[in-house]
Length: 371
Image 1: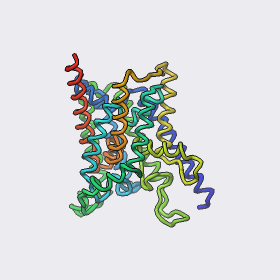
Image 2: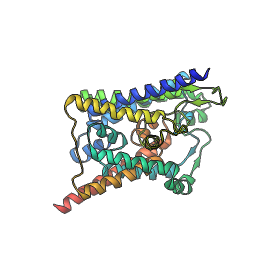
Image 3: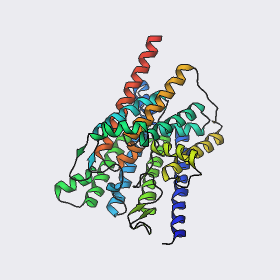
Image 4: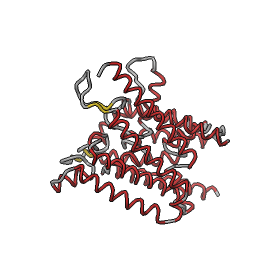
């Protein structure tokens, strides 16, 4: 492979990633896909529609990812979610912080980008603060705390923490075979739950859940198949092109926002490269803006007052710190990570939901007290 061929392949990964982001932003804006909103709907209204949309996205992603594992196209162990080291404390605490933060900031990282595209200036502020906090937790002051404390608490497993690897190891079977059957079985159970009620069969739920799940699968294919080199022509090592983690990646919206802030500030520095995650994040804003402008829903919106500003700033910080500590957000862990059937992703998602529920109950208590 020549240098020109390599550069062209990197450009195609980034271009396709941007297109995936555009599609995600358009779908999320059109269907109101939002995990925080889904949890709030269940708690305050008893409405499970958006929760079923989120679970449908998980089901589609699980089936699609594990079908690719069964075909030999990708490996869960090549991602950041399925290593043999299980940092359970980081995942639980980071998820808890992220869950609290997304309630205070009126939405998770993905929803923040979607709202930026719709003209929400509050979300633009959250985007900047989230990105700075995330980068600090990746490489700055908060990273020192993370590495010295929660990341030091690790459970070492004999194989990767994804269920197919663990079960294959226990049964002496092939991971590819176990992944194909297990992914199909778990995905089928989740699909059955989604479709069991009429609310799970509405056009928005079906369209949003199917589209988001398929986009996550496409993200895995893009980095793990299209942009994968068994032997880089320069380093002679296995490489996943244009990924910030140097591993296989799909959709996630915390660390990539941090890298996007870094790239926006230092784009003239040749060592700063636009990555797949940042290209997807930019696409989400663009796709959301197109739909918002096309449907007439684009609206400029600012903070209501000091308390509203403080809540969003605090939420952005908690999401940045928590999302990096937990290795992902409601999409990064909640759909992309879950699709690998990783134990760590289950812990992180449980922490996110627990944090969101606690924050929503606190907000309800504040309203009742003031009333």
